[in-house]
Length: 312
Length: 309
Image (cartoon, rainbow over all chains, first blue to last red; front, top):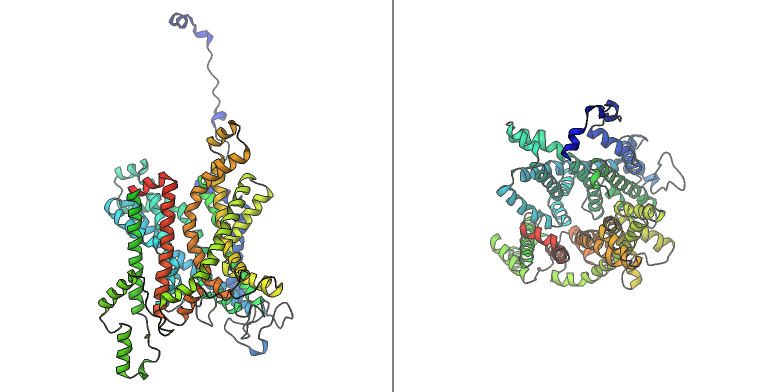
């Protein structure tokens, strides 16, 4: 074998042709977020969800101003007018038993419901991310104790906490949001913690620490941006849940006080008249369902876009 | 295994104690008095009434009394309905709620498993898309909206089934159906995902290579493995069913626990709220505990991580 190699003369070889174009990445280079955007917009369901949310959100802002009524104005000449029979003036969704315009009340209520959900999601986000990242980042005894507490909190049914808190607090936009968020952040903190534990052991974290990055810089610059994906996904599923709970509370009589309106309050009001005037329940119920439907679609789409590994 | 159960059990007891404590102190800081028209009652009579309910003792003593009674299953007396114990009222309302809940759960799980299976096996077909749409709708439409729809169309417009009330089996069909949608949605989604995962495993190929019948492969090898993780959502589903039952019972006018709970909230019947809260919490936490244990039994991997924690 060795002898054979010695017999090989250099002229048997010729240099390989080195072609740069072969190695080149011909596709446009995409950053992570560009890729996310591409994946997201190629998902029809997710886009439909996003558009629906935007439309409902916009209507919640401009809808109440589209006719001449406001959400609390009563008119006893036009009680319980169904939009399907005859339209008096511009009561596009009809009126309720106090002669209030349901178009205005429905969009106004949708806005309030969205607002409550957003505040609840905001509180969830703040507490959940802070708690989860502290617990995950510091680990050890801190983590042990923080997780013990979470373990107990997870066991408490959120329904019970929300109801008890609302019996104690005066129902309003902020107390309702607070009550919903009070149980919601636990889930968020668990997800952030799990991510933190995973990220902590990666090399770039070690490198950053070797270069002298402090705790604050580590968390803010290196760890939290990498947790964003799962956090956004969790948030997208928190919002419809908050919307549902608000409606639920409104329905069992723990929601906003009249003449305030939210989707739950409207459904509750309308339901009392369900057998006679079903249209009063119909519109708010449809908008509530559409909102929850589109947030679920959006959440699914974002999950697939942000974390393709999770795609199911 | 014993250690795992013990740890879970400990958490259950602590959680219940936290709930009991929070409920107790919250109730004592509520505005208003349990006596309806306090200022008109003569002082001696008031003292007597307070003594009867044990409200004249110092707070820590009341708290200990309350915990002691709780352990014995005594939830106190209703403030609103004279002399009726909360336990007795729960006993009265519970059967109706349990019947609706169980029917919804059994129906939902059965249909969910079937739908999930079919849509995983026929991935990408019309059936699959239909099942997906159904499950998203089940998530999106709150049970009270569904219940109102059913009550109006099936009960009032078409007059097929009673629109409200309680008594015969026919009365329980609509409420159970309204509640079961969420169960169907969640189980379908879960089973489909798990089935797809299992169907891609190597042992499925092995089973086919052995020449097993398709039916045997699907039922024995795929479905059984796919259903293990599905057990975990039974716990949260029970919670969701109870939440749903509060509103569904209100819509269908069913004299169950949910309706009683809502009623006690509206009338500020504090002992009743406290009692029902404790009962609910106990049921929910117990069901989660059982599901945890069950899961530990069927899947040893969970048990290991559980014990390590």
